[in-house]
Image (cartoon, rainbow, N blue to C red; front, top):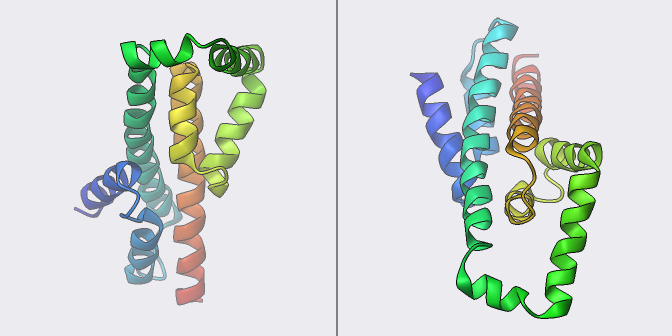
Length: 156
């Protein structure tokens, strides 16, 4: 049941910024037994990481779809705007390691905010094969650090 509720809260928090998965995981960590097996923490963190990635994928897809709308296309028909989008797209496509690095830092540290980066990634079409695994791994690491850190502080 804990995995299901963690998945649900993480997914909602990825879409609704007012719901905070970090606070939820902090509370969960205070309720876990001090002798909780480390693998259980990894499983909880991975569950939250996958759910967050799915939620951020919604923002990514919305941004990608919005780029196809007539209104956005009309706005982008202005030379300077189209040029800026094209420049960012060229930077992303030509530097997958840089893109993965920025996504990873955002996923783990939260700066720049992952929600904003998800929208940008969708609008410039970062490959899903890069976006999804990077966000899952980054968020899993972030959430494991929260669970383990709070668990150590409370249990130790």
